[in-house]
Amino acid sequence: MASTDTAPQAKADDLAGLEAGLDALDAVEIRRTPVREVLVKKVLPPALAVTLVLAVWQVLVSANITDPTKLPAPSAVWDGLADLWLKGTLFDIIWTSVSRGLFGFLLALAIGTPLGLLVARVKFVRAAIGPVLSGLQSLPSVAWVPPAVLWFGLNDAMMYTVILLGAVPSIANGLVSGVDQVPPLFLRAGRTLGATGLKGTWYVVMPAALPGYLAGLKQGWAFSWRSLMAAEIIASSPDLGLGLGQLLENGRNNIDLPGVFLAIILILVVGIAIDLLVFSPVERWVLRNRGLLAQS
Image (cartoon, rainbow, N blue to C red; front, side, top):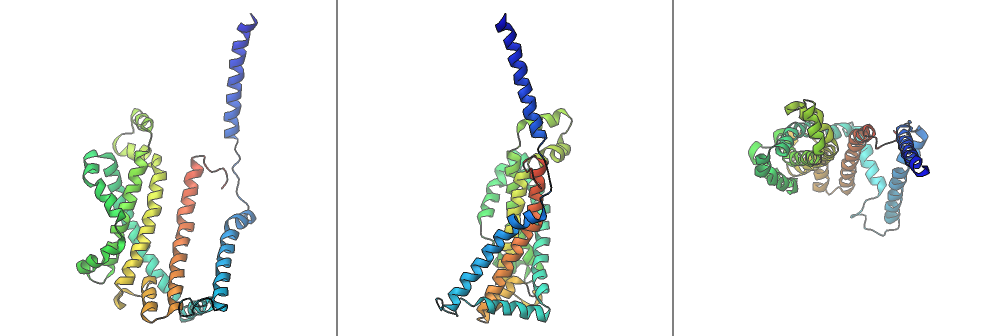
């Protein structure tokens, strides 16, 4: 009799433990990270890393370990930055490249998203152009500059063509990868609830594929920015305006090494800023909505 009573009691204890575990998961505290904690954990480490690099750079120059014609002093690069600031051309140069990069990326997004869905959902299309997209993704963006110049000449259409050919395959392949990872159960549940066709794509496939899609977007932006810089360096022209790529090429033509380093640093800063201001918040939002990020 005792053994008979013990079994239901054990089951009841197991259910109680399971409910307690689920309650504990639901009770995860989501709090806003204090500004001081953000500064210590997010801002201070990269600031220290940059300071260390600048210190090592200055030591190499001051101790004459490197040839000044090979590695300019940080102060020389700073003087170049100050000169552009005083002339009032610094932000114009940055905006020329950033505006091109963002507009080209948005065009790539508008083309790559439906293309990725088509490749992911239609077997014949995947078999036909899936390998082509993978091949295009591995092709260096700089290879598209010469034909784009011959097609369109030295103008913005050439720039956007190079950006599209570099970014669209990455965005499409990222979405294909995300769709491939959607559990079949989600699709069956969506069809049961009436989410078929475009509704199923919008309400089931795209939300479930969002992590892979977001990774493709980040890679697509990286390809957009690199493609643009390659186009500006190779196909520089006064009619195109002065962007960061042209600034880098002008430094090379004028044997202005501080100017070359300044252009490289500005290109790097813009790339990091776009990632921190655009993609990182979106990534945190996705993780938070999926319960994978306890703190915000």
